[in-house]
Length: 279
Image 1 (cartoon, rainbow, N blue to C red):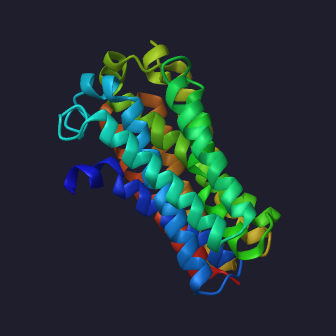
Image 2: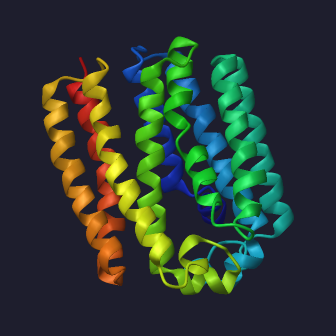
């Protein structure tokens, strides 16, 4: 079962589950059957995205050092096996949401699957703007959780979406820059590949590192969290901004790696404080 588990990209699936739960909890949803079924449905859909993304990109993955050992390029599974597994996961995840959650949560999850697999994945070989498309798809789990809890999308739900959306841009640009030779070999038109001088990459890292700060402070101004959260978000956001500015100034591997690693800690820290500091 290990190759099938690897197809699911379990770390990403776990993040999807946790941020879905965050949206549900911040919306005031109570722990119970609806939450558990919603988490199951969204996690299965996230696993389907990871699986079908690798099925679509097997040729590209085989050219990249960082992905050459994935189950499909390594020959651990065949393409028909991966396709059948991914479609089954998608169908099961959507069926669970349709049966045990609500129409809005189902609709957002279905739209995310379409956006990620039919827009973001193929367009990565066409334009660097797909980073923003992928960030939209990656920021929908809190919306799904909120929708499952309340059946609507209030302004506060979009605050959670904005934090997760804006956080992804420095995160991914740092990763793309660290592995730009790999991405170029695979034919992916990510920004650090098409931006030879690095000016646009640097500007985008700086801009989005800055916008993460006001986005992360927004919960304090719209009744979602108290002053303790606001202070913590200010400290973390300022530190993240400093690392982003440093990376944008130098584009040195050590600095982009530092930003990437910090981004892995930043989102769990912000959302954890939001849960603890919520009103």
